[in-house]
Length: 424
Image (cartoon, rainbow, N blue to C red; front, top):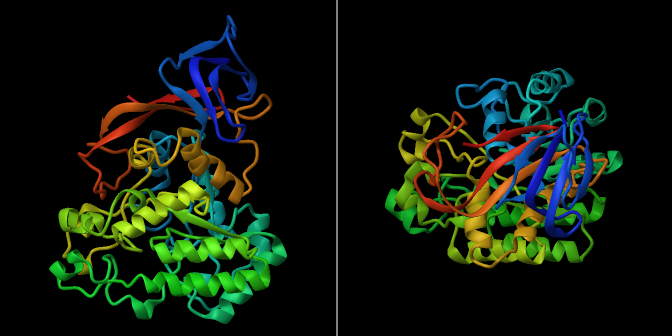
């Protein structure tokens, strides 16, 4: 059946459209028309009164823990969480068990993803075999099998010569590397910022911001030499932001990823939320948080990605130093970012959508995401002004400090093809 979305306001960061528009979607799931006062007697009607209709959100950094750690999350629950959060495309990280470093493991994820047409689930592959930082994976074979890029997320590429070879290989294949930047010798204890009140309260030395900054500086230099396209993941430090800003000015093909939790929270959240605010890189100072927000406003930060990292309640109940790092993020991301960025005037709604949809699509070269005739319908319906309090989740993970917090804005539905998936 055809689907006609009526009475909504189209916000499309790809085309810059901000106007009342109806959207008619054909039985094949392709947008047939975008205009005012459209009609189609045989179509199912989706009333978007009071809502905006936009390209679906894209998250280029999620952990679905499948294969190997499905007590934390699996592709089924991850897909449900993504759809509830307004995401129509996600890219899974490679640090599963086994690591996604072979065509066989990549195909496992791809085949399981087929059963979830409500979300495009893409799978990144490891840069090095087994994430061991010793031997590069077969980029050519994995690209031919459909990976969108390569990452050893969770593990720093400490060997500079190996990082250089990885960039040369990526440049040769015109593909993307996504780097977790962490000089281990400067991380005395992960999950909390060095020198913070939280670290002192816990009796831990913490992770120094230079652990990130030193690796960012090194890899900007290597990217300039090789011409490789490199994403710097979950950037947390004001100095890292400035290094990336200057690297871009020098001509490096580099991109900056930031997370909702680094946008909205500081190191003090650890005092309130304990292990639910333990993450890697850790939450840092208010000055760092403000620098991240400013980078989103001036375009230095290209994209917002959740680093959705579910863990079991039992794991997070361990003492801080023994608990795993990471929080869930797919379902709360829009509300958190709208509250911290749009409601405060830092970004406009179109600018936020640019960082949560257009930016990720451009960096990962995902075509056809704008709301235009001839493109497949991958849409999200958003309420920007309602109060939202999260108390339950589709994800298996409930490890987030945003539970019970009053936030502003909610995802009301996603549309994939001619099927609408409503929330509530």
